[in-house]
Length: 305
Image (tube, rainbow, N blue to C red; front, side, top):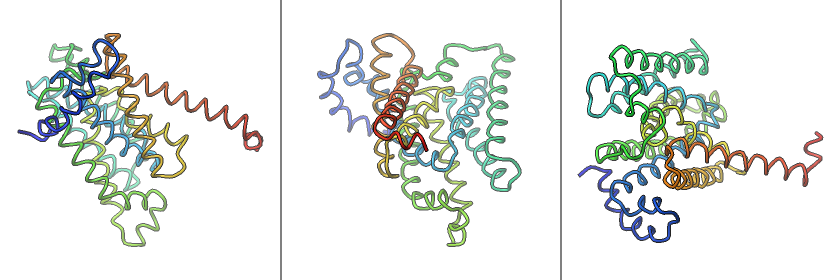
């Protein structure tokens, strides 16, 4: 029994107890049916880890790296599918980790800026995936579409174990690195003077980011990873007053995006990934507009300055 199955056994009674109180005709099955429970558990785990990771990415001005590595992972998925792999996500993990290491090294050695290297890998690996699929004669099949835009229904026991292993490992790494990440984000030169292994911290953080991005592919798809990795954290930044409060707000906005998105996708029969992304964007827009109106009404002097 893998880690995903163990977590499902532990959480299944809780989900089943909640099911009768859930609205809609289809949505309650995410809490009572075994197959959909796997989907719900995977979505919740990914959201929690992505929220923590996204908060660190924002304070380090690395919001785009998640989107870039997601596109890289598509190249790995395409290679895995063409080679007949039973789990293309392992190929995606290898591709994304290698790309993350190369991006970090080029940035730390000042060979290219972070944005430039991310853009090159993003377009190059997405193009590689599309070319490989076209040459192999497969094209954009329903399976490929699911990896591009997410499909929670494809999460089987093996996928849940894969996602759970990455999420648990990433959370432990982020907890271990939290002080070092904060120090390097605030003042990397001072952190280096104090003896912190800044380069190693950055490298491990990049690898962790790559792994988390791959774990998100089946939930929101390679094209919509930013929806859970950056949008909730950016929304939290609008209302949070400290790093800890931003972490809490990020979890709230992320989980709301997933639950509301899954509800509407189930009841309206739309893609789960696209609906989650849309809800996350609407929450951000609502909070942003609310902040603008609040400051305009109650703090007009701040706008004038």
